[in-house]
Length: 186
Length: 186
DNA sequence: GTATGCATGTAATACGTTACATGATTGT
DNA sequence: ACAATCATGTAACGTATTACATGCATAC
Image (tube, rainbow over the protein chains, first blue to last red):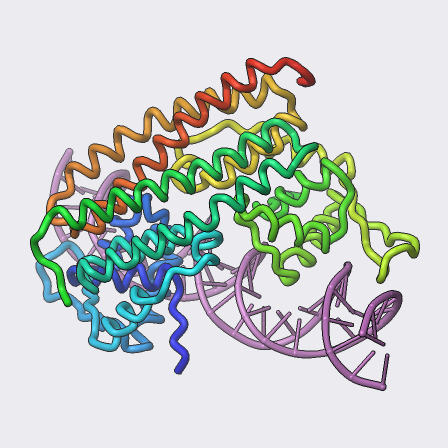
């Protein structure tokens, strides 16, 4: 079956885990919170919902009357929840940190609720470790470059500072999770 | 003709403006400096080079002997330089800041060399203004959310801090550009 | 003469972007 | 009647991902 869900697909699963929503609701969410930086275009979301439904990861039901036009409300199925959990539980790799940081953050956003606080803490520890290992490599690369134009150099510095900001965030987030003690699965 | 070049295409133009390179060289550059976060896969780069050559933005010439295998070295044409300049000179919009920050940074990396220091400073001012206008909106959004899961909240905070890091970088980059006084076109 | 590294490429596939089409309801 | 908003969708297109194929040179 090799499900192979896209980043957008996982974002939809994660949001539908929190509550049943229509495609239109999901679009509005994406345009409201561009932190996740997910496209709110109908040409992306509706086909993605169809793919997920074809794989039995979500199920759509047409809402009875009420609204201006009939809405199709999607909810997560248990295979869908399983798929979401599997994605969330993956270990943090160096490649993730280099090429897919946004996806890591998206995973973290859903993680506390779906996998529980201990998993989220574990995730932050792994992220911290990968960042701490990667940042020195970048710094070495930056200093090794000599005939690079000024603005190029500054852009590289921004990249490094950005990773450092993520690292200090990861530490603060971990202690924030430890401090406040409600909820928290297995 | 509606050239419509992709982000990868512009990255290739920007690098080829600095020096003639082969497809393989470009791949190595992308795997070495993932700050730009550009794919180094042959299935992306070689077709992109072909598209650029078909549009007369670059020209490839097969290198005479020397290396282990014949290499095809690409160099920028004057239409290519014009296309690059047009991309670099575009104003910074709020949409860029929200959806295409990586492309903005890529543009800045090439900007000092191609458009000159005054243009780069102008760019930083525009970026600063858009960031300063956008960050409060995000903060208001974050505080308006109530029943959001803990890790989701933390992820949003990272997003805001990330924008703030970009803002303070833009300020520092501008004063760094002002301090050191060599080079600098029109 | 076989493996390894350099170097260029192609094919199948999946996906996002853009633009367009459509239907229903509310307000003017 | 008409516009605006809500809501779902499709079609054309471009392009990235993944995996594979190929050629040549050097080293063992």
